[in-house]
Image: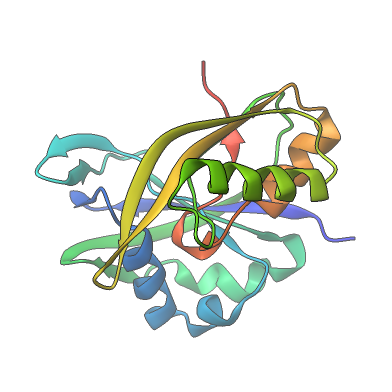
Length: 194
Protein backbone atom coordinates (compact mmCIF):
# COMPACT_ATOMS: atom_id res chain seq x y z
CA UNK A 1 0.00 0.00 0.00
CA UNK A 2 1.34 3.42 -0.98
CA UNK A 3 1.62 6.13 1.67
CA UNK A 4 1.26 9.62 0.25
CA UNK A 5 3.01 12.67 1.68
CA UNK A 6 3.37 16.31 0.73
CA UNK A 7 6.83 17.34 -0.46
CA UNK A 8 6.85 21.04 0.39
CA UNK A 9 9.34 23.48 -1.20
CA UNK A 10 9.80 27.14 -0.25
CA UNK A 11 9.19 29.46 -3.21
CA UNK A 12 11.31 32.61 -3.45
CA UNK A 13 10.43 35.44 -5.79
CA UNK A 14 8.22 38.48 -6.03
CA UNK A 15 5.10 37.52 -7.97
CA UNK A 16 3.46 34.91 -10.16
CA UNK A 17 0.28 34.87 -12.28
CA UNK A 18 -2.94 33.94 -10.47
CA UNK A 19 -3.68 31.54 -13.36
CA UNK A 20 -0.44 29.52 -13.13
CA UNK A 21 -1.39 25.81 -12.99
CA UNK A 22 -0.49 24.93 -16.58
CA UNK A 23 2.57 27.21 -16.68
CA UNK A 24 3.87 25.73 -13.41
CA UNK A 25 3.34 22.19 -14.74
CA UNK A 26 5.24 23.10 -17.93
CA UNK A 27 8.09 24.79 -16.09
CA UNK A 28 8.61 21.91 -13.64
CA UNK A 29 8.44 19.40 -16.52
CA UNK A 30 11.23 21.28 -18.36
CA UNK A 31 13.65 21.23 -15.43
CA UNK A 32 12.56 17.80 -14.13
CA UNK A 33 11.20 15.60 -16.98
CA UNK A 34 10.27 12.82 -14.52
CA UNK A 35 7.45 15.10 -13.31
CA UNK A 36 5.80 15.03 -16.74
CA UNK A 37 6.02 11.24 -16.88
CA UNK A 38 4.91 10.44 -13.30
CA UNK A 39 1.40 9.02 -12.94
CA UNK A 40 0.74 9.26 -9.20
CA UNK A 41 1.77 12.81 -8.36
CA UNK A 42 -0.43 15.83 -7.64
CA UNK A 43 0.48 19.52 -7.65
CA UNK A 44 -0.96 22.13 -5.33
CA UNK A 45 -1.50 25.64 -6.66
CA UNK A 46 0.80 28.26 -5.14
CA UNK A 47 -0.93 30.57 -2.69
CA UNK A 48 -0.30 34.28 -2.36
CA UNK A 49 -1.90 37.67 -1.83
CA UNK A 50 -3.71 39.07 -4.86
CA UNK A 51 -1.93 42.19 -6.18
CA UNK A 52 -4.27 43.03 -9.06
CA UNK A 53 -3.62 42.71 -12.81
CA UNK A 54 -3.81 38.91 -12.53
CA UNK A 55 -0.77 38.62 -10.22
CA UNK A 56 -0.09 37.04 -6.81
CA UNK A 57 2.47 38.35 -4.32
CA UNK A 58 5.08 35.81 -3.17
CA UNK A 59 6.04 36.06 0.52
CA UNK A 60 8.65 34.16 2.60
CA UNK A 61 6.18 31.43 3.62
CA UNK A 62 4.94 30.70 0.08
CA UNK A 63 5.06 26.99 -0.74
CA UNK A 64 5.10 24.68 -3.74
CA UNK A 65 3.50 21.35 -2.77
CA UNK A 66 3.91 18.04 -4.57
CA UNK A 67 1.71 15.22 -3.22
CA UNK A 68 3.25 11.85 -3.99
CA UNK A 69 3.94 8.35 -2.65
CA UNK A 70 6.66 8.48 0.02
CA UNK A 71 8.82 5.99 -1.91
CA UNK A 72 8.98 8.46 -4.83
CA UNK A 73 10.43 11.43 -2.95
CA UNK A 74 13.99 10.88 -4.19
CA UNK A 75 12.91 11.47 -7.81
CA UNK A 76 11.73 15.01 -7.04
CA UNK A 77 14.33 16.30 -4.53
CA UNK A 78 16.32 17.75 -7.46
CA UNK A 79 13.66 20.43 -7.90
CA UNK A 80 15.40 22.19 -4.98
CA UNK A 81 17.61 25.04 -6.18
CA UNK A 82 15.97 25.26 -9.60
CA UNK A 83 14.65 28.47 -11.16
CA UNK A 84 11.20 28.23 -12.69
CA UNK A 85 9.81 30.61 -15.30
CA UNK A 86 6.06 30.82 -14.77
CA UNK A 87 4.72 32.81 -17.70
CA UNK A 88 7.53 35.37 -17.46
CA UNK A 89 7.69 35.45 -13.64
CA UNK A 90 10.83 33.79 -12.25
CA UNK A 91 10.90 32.00 -8.89
CA UNK A 92 13.62 30.07 -7.07
CA UNK A 93 12.72 26.76 -5.44
CA UNK A 94 14.16 26.12 -1.96
CA UNK A 95 15.01 23.02 0.07
CA UNK A 96 11.97 20.76 0.71
CA UNK A 97 10.41 19.30 3.82
CA UNK A 98 7.96 16.43 3.98
CA UNK A 99 4.58 16.72 5.64
CA UNK A 100 2.16 13.91 6.46
CA UNK A 101 -1.41 14.15 5.21
CA UNK A 102 -3.69 15.10 8.11
CA UNK A 103 -7.28 13.86 8.25
CA UNK A 104 -9.90 16.59 8.41
CA UNK A 105 -13.71 16.32 8.43
CA UNK A 106 -13.94 18.97 5.67
CA UNK A 107 -11.75 19.19 2.58
CA UNK A 108 -11.64 21.81 -0.17
CA UNK A 109 -10.22 21.99 -3.71
CA UNK A 110 -9.88 25.40 -5.39
CA UNK A 111 -10.66 23.92 -8.80
CA UNK A 112 -11.73 20.49 -10.06
CA UNK A 113 -12.14 19.74 -13.76
CA UNK A 114 -13.81 16.90 -15.65
CA UNK A 115 -14.15 15.97 -19.28
CA UNK A 116 -17.15 17.83 -20.73
CA UNK A 117 -17.73 19.44 -17.32
CA UNK A 118 -18.69 22.90 -18.62
CA UNK A 119 -22.26 22.52 -17.37
CA UNK A 120 -22.71 22.22 -13.61
CA UNK A 121 -25.27 19.34 -13.63
CA UNK A 122 -23.00 17.23 -15.83
CA UNK A 123 -19.98 18.14 -13.68
CA UNK A 124 -21.86 17.26 -10.48
CA UNK A 125 -22.90 13.85 -11.86
CA UNK A 126 -19.32 12.99 -12.82
CA UNK A 127 -17.81 14.14 -9.52
CA UNK A 128 -20.55 12.35 -7.51
CA UNK A 129 -19.68 9.17 -9.40
CA UNK A 130 -15.95 9.59 -8.64
CA UNK A 131 -16.66 10.24 -4.94
CA UNK A 132 -18.86 7.14 -4.79
CA UNK A 133 -16.16 5.07 -6.50
CA UNK A 134 -13.72 6.11 -3.74
CA UNK A 135 -16.22 4.88 -1.14
CA UNK A 136 -16.75 8.34 0.35
CA UNK A 137 -20.08 9.17 2.03
CA UNK A 138 -19.38 12.82 2.92
CA UNK A 139 -21.54 15.75 1.83
CA UNK A 140 -20.46 17.07 -1.57
CA UNK A 141 -20.76 20.80 -2.33
CA UNK A 142 -20.09 22.29 -5.76
CA UNK A 143 -18.92 25.89 -5.45
CA UNK A 144 -17.91 28.66 -7.83
CA UNK A 145 -17.36 28.12 -11.53
CA UNK A 146 -13.69 28.79 -12.35
CA UNK A 147 -11.56 28.79 -15.48
CA UNK A 148 -7.86 28.47 -16.21
CA UNK A 149 -5.73 28.56 -19.32
CA UNK A 150 -4.09 25.55 -20.97
CA UNK A 151 -2.20 26.74 -24.06
CA UNK A 152 -4.74 29.10 -25.66
CA UNK A 153 -7.82 27.27 -24.39
CA UNK A 154 -9.90 28.21 -21.33
CA UNK A 155 -10.74 25.12 -19.24
CA UNK A 156 -13.82 25.20 -16.99
CA UNK A 157 -13.97 23.74 -13.50
CA UNK A 158 -15.60 24.32 -10.13
CA UNK A 159 -14.44 24.66 -6.55
CA UNK A 160 -15.47 21.62 -4.53
CA UNK A 161 -15.77 20.93 -0.81
CA UNK A 162 -16.73 17.74 0.97
CA UNK A 163 -17.87 17.70 4.61
CA UNK A 164 -18.60 15.03 7.24
CA UNK A 165 -15.64 12.87 6.22
CA UNK A 166 -14.24 10.09 8.38
CA UNK A 167 -10.46 10.09 8.91
CA UNK A 168 -10.08 7.24 6.39
CA UNK A 169 -12.23 8.99 3.78
CA UNK A 170 -10.32 12.25 4.27
CA UNK A 171 -6.94 10.63 3.66
CA UNK A 172 -8.27 8.64 0.69
CA UNK A 173 -9.61 11.82 -0.95
CA UNK A 174 -6.40 13.75 -0.33
CA UNK A 175 -4.36 10.90 -1.84
CA UNK A 176 -6.58 10.33 -4.88
CA UNK A 177 -7.93 13.80 -5.68
CA UNK A 178 -10.84 14.21 -8.08
CA UNK A 179 -11.20 15.04 -11.76
CA UNK A 180 -8.45 15.63 -14.27
CA UNK A 181 -5.35 17.79 -14.70
CA UNK A 182 -4.05 16.89 -11.24
CA UNK A 183 -0.48 17.87 -12.16
CA UNK A 184 -1.78 21.38 -12.96
CA UNK A 185 -3.21 22.08 -9.51
CA UNK A 186 -6.72 20.71 -10.16
CA UNK A 187 -8.50 18.29 -7.83
CA UNK A 188 -5.99 18.97 -5.01
CA UNK A 189 -7.82 18.67 -1.68
CA UNK A 190 -6.69 20.32 1.55
CA UNK A 191 -8.32 20.76 4.97
CA UNK A 192 -10.95 23.48 4.77
CA UNK A 193 -9.88 26.52 6.77
CA UNK A 194 -12.74 28.12 8.68
